[in-house]
Image 1 (cartoon, rainbow, N blue to C red):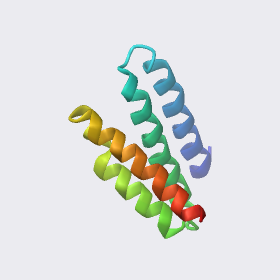
Image 2: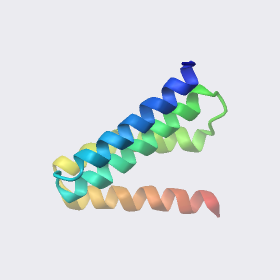
Image 3: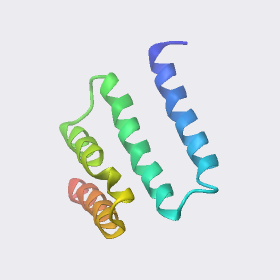
Image 4: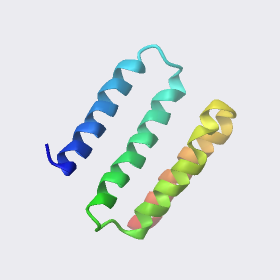
Length: 92
C-alpha cells in the first residue's frame, strides 16, 4: 500500500471504529469523534502539500480545544459553534 492509501485507510479505520464505539459512548463523544475526523482529514491533506493555511488553522483550533468535551460540556458546544462559524466565514 502506498503512503497516501495508508493515510486513507487509517482515516477509514478511525471512522469505522468510532462509529462502533459511539454505540455505547456518551452522546457528545460522537461530536468529538467527528471533529477528530476533521483533524485527521486535514492531516491527510497536509501530506499532499497543497493544504490551505485556513485548514491548518482549523486543525490547530481542533487540537487545542477538542478535549473540552471531557471537562465542560458548554465549552465544547461553544467550540463546535466556533468551528462552524470559521467554515461559514471562509465561504463568504
